[in-house]
Length: 110
Length: 119
View (tube, chains in turn orange, yellow):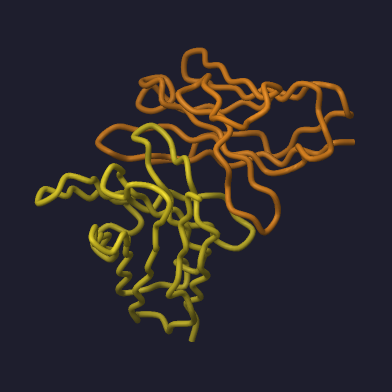
């Protein structure tokens, strides 16, 4: 199972929006509505930010939103704040009780 | 408070074995699948495997990179998850996280335990 493809980096100024893409195949991203997104600050454990493509867990700001079209999912962070600077990983169910993660995107708040 | 705490990491020689543990608290352990995820130094997240929660019919699934070498198990009365790692390779060096599995995502993560495979 190959890792999902994400851009290595993305950036934006405070208050702006940034969108991160996550490209897979019809066997993972395109085949199931089970895409999730994780935020990871340096030296910390990942935190679930989006699940089932568009849903936000309790406690996650509504500045974070998810979407999907075909084999590509996206995470948008609106109204960027300094604390949003982190690595972001997508993940998808890939069938037969397997999961696959994306390559990761480093988000910088300028 | 919902919490996962990993332990058992350390330095091991190539070809050696190590057993990681994950202690769960603050939620009903038997209601959940559980997973292991790892992160090599400076690299991204890699899903290692999962175990279901059906008593007497636990099912495990693994990433191709660890299939046949790693075994996931659980002890429900002890609220504990385990990862037995055999035939370790240098490329298994990573921080290993246990995570609670909601079937479609991993909604609670531990802080991780570090495994270093080196001679």
